[in-house]
Image (cartoon, rainbow, N blue to C red; front, side, top):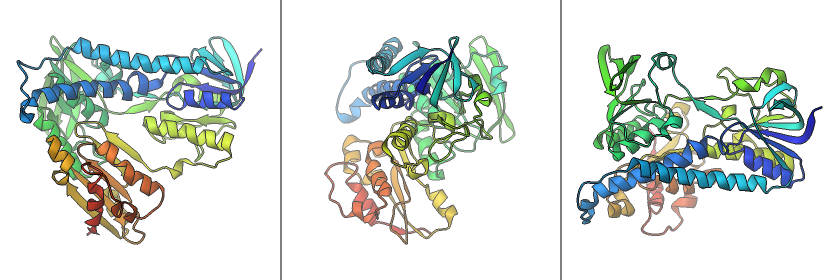
Amino acid sequence: MARHFDALVIGSGQAGPFLAVRLAKAGRQVAFVERKGLGGTCVNNGCIPTKTLVASARVAHQARVAANYGVILAGDVRVDMAAVKARKDQVVGQSISGLEDWIKATPGVTWLHGEARFTGPRQVKVAGETLTATNVFINTGGRPVIPDWAAASGVPVLTNIEMMDLAALPDHLVIVGGSYIGLEFAQMYRRFGAAVTVVEYSDRLIGREDPEISDAVRAVMEAEGVDIVCGARDFALEKTAAGARLGVTVAGAPRVVEGSHVLMAVGRKPNVEALNLAAAGVALDAHGFIQVDDQLRTSAEGVFALGDVNGRGAFTHTSYNDFEIVAANLLDGDARRVSDRIACYALFIDPPLARIGQSETEVRKSGRPALISVMPMTRVGRARERGETTGFMKVPVDAETNRILGAALFGIEADEAIHGLLDVMSAKQPYTVISRTMHIHPTVSELIPTLLEGLKPLT
């Protein structure tokens, strides 16, 4: 006989646990299913562990350049990768323990370990037991893509998952993919002391960004000793005694990169195969993601999809926002929608790149009358004081409404400073709300009003 619940939450990424607890506190009986690591990608092999590693890498870098600040350190800077990994594991462990204690302490949540597979509409089997629910919430996330040419090579390639288990420094880390994940690992491991080469198919790094941003990020990477190969074609990977050999062609000419380790950072795909979604009547889109509407409902009645699996965002914050949207609609009578949110994300290299809304390229393509202002980070007192003046700030504004259309901040503390712009965009207020507001000195944010005062027509 099937066991019935008011709600069934499948997966424990950033949406799942919060939704399970919120539903239980609202009086629902909730089944919470996870087949592997509590916390999903973010906690286990994504945001939390990688940014913990980034922090260690930054300390190593700061120690190497300490003399620039009048601080003299004796001897060479060495990195103990086993200790770096241990620190990362401790931070991850604390996050997982906190989640586990929270869920177990919540009345109304039944935690089940195993893989959920649909056997009918709103009916799944987990560890031999059949469960039914009034509502089902899918939060199974995604995983790294390994291209066929790499999988068939016999080389034990790494993804962001396996990188979390490294306790020794690679001699030469070859990274296939010059986008957000690949670049974070590139700078991180170069600062740890490894030789690093990034090989990218596109003609420039992070191709979704404006060209000058791609160029500026590349300059930062190369200045720290990362080799960059863009425009690569005809990928061929083979195992060697020392690790692996990657062969490509660039502008028709052959090029070979020898490395001890190979990291694949070429994209992610949704975890849907094991769910047997056809039995539930849940449709996928052309890219294999679960189709959802503006309130995250799937094609099957009573079934919702949240997080990376729905293709409506690939970040921890979009997954958490999915939870907020579903909870608001189901429990609060608040008709929140996915289309209400403004795109926002960051590349957590040093300095960070923060992006919201439309890029300059997208604004130009729209053909709308617009204003734009660009300011180098050399104008920012905080940047000069810290000796970190790389980068610039750029904001396009609608010329008719004076509303901010987007922003790109590349520089020290950009990932924090950008939120003032994001909040004004979300409030649908004109840019003058910021430009006429007094800010604290000396900060990065204090120069944003000055940036906006320099708006000129986009030509």
